[in-house]
Amino acid sequence: MKSKELAQLGKEDLAAKLKQAEIELIKINVQVATGTQIKNPGQIRNLKKTIARIKSLTDKEVSGQ
Image (tube, rainbow, N blue to C red; front, side, top):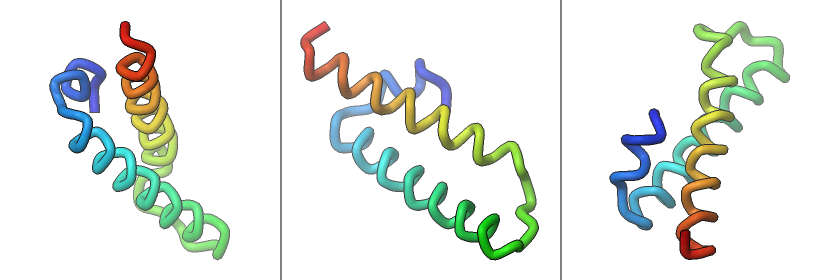
């Protein structure tokens, strides 16, 4: 997701998206570890970026910016 889309979500929605993205990343990493070929290798990179975006938005909210 893009930063603008994430910025419009509430705290609960961000937490849910974060949990969902982390679970999906774990599933893909398990597939890679077991030697299964994944459909979209770029998905790992996108998930990591999405997780970082969500965490940075939640950190900004906590710090009050």
